[in-house]
Length: 219
Image (cartoon, rainbow, N blue to C red; front, side, top):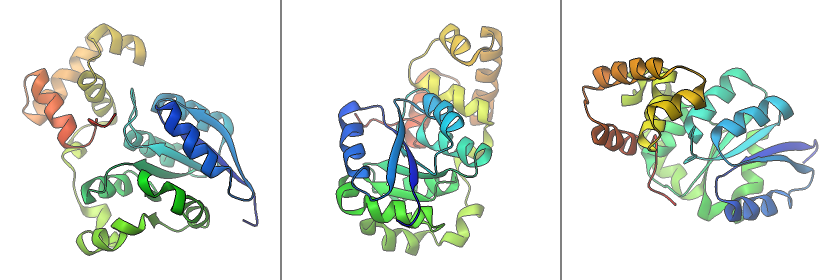
C-alpha cells in the first residue's frame, strides 16, 4: 500500500470482529480506526472518523449492512463499503452492489482475500470474492445492476428501517424511542409499508424481511 488506509470495522459478533481485525492489521499501511457492533453505531463512527473503507457485516441489528451502505455511500462518498457475509447467493451480492457497496467478501475467504479486497476497492475498483465473481457476473452483468429492481425499492428509507426493526421484534414504543419519533408516526409508517407490500400481519412482514435479505437467520 503506498498510502495509509483508514478502516472502520462493523460486525455484531465480537469474536468475528476480532478475527477480521487481526487480518486487517496485517495489511501494510492499514489502520483500524474504530469498531462498531451495529449499523447505527457504524454510521456514527463513519461521521466521526471519515475512514477510507468500511468493512461491514451484511446482517447487523437495528440497521443492516445494506441500509448502512446506502447511507454511507450517499452521505460520505469518501468512504467505500465492503460487505462481509457468509452468503454466496448471487441475490445477496446484487443487493450489496445495488446498495452502493464496492466490494463483497465472503467471510470464509477473509484470510486469503482481505488484503486484495482492501487494495482494489481503495484504488477505485469493485471486488467480489473469487468463488462467486465469475458465477455472479454471468448472471448479473455489472452494467445491469442499476436497472434491476428489488421488492424493497417500493419502500422509502424510513419504511425499510421500520420494517427491519419490526422484523427484529422491536415494539412500536421501542422503535419510536430508537428513531426519536412518536409511536403514532411509527404506526403510520407501518400502515403505509403494509399497504405497499400488500402484507397485513407481522409474521408476513418477518417472512418478507427474511426473503429480501433485510434481516437474516445467520448467527
